[in-house]
Image 1 (cartoon, rainbow, N blue to C red):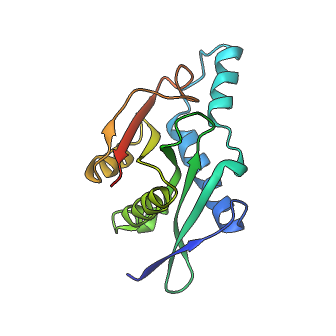
Image 2: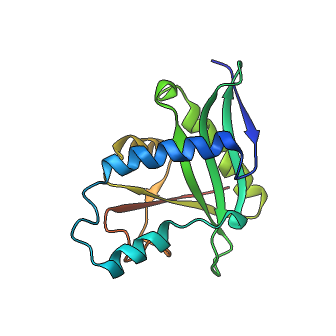
Length: 166
């Protein structure tokens, strides 16, 4: 399978569609979360998952030879002092392309972009109901880390990983 990576804007309609599909899938997987949460807990969770497009430094699409979109990933610079930590966001592979190297290609390209920007590691947040994502990250050398802002205390089902670059 021939796959190329395209750099696009956050509001590229293909990326928007993939993120909406991811939101729907994650909504089903995590429907149980928040049922007993207080309004304050729900608001903290919503804040944790809010993305400011201005903080995205790279937005990537994996595209096949026919122009079909197979996946998406983004790199975010977190608004905090640790300029060496950059966050992998919204890694998505369409179901028919899963297990075919698309996720690996996107993660490695994000890591290259992060390194070029001066990052010394990439961090990420995933969830306890995403074993395939955890498996990919572990295969690629990501190791568990403590929860970090903006998720710390707001996302109890969160799992957090980092990989040193260089």
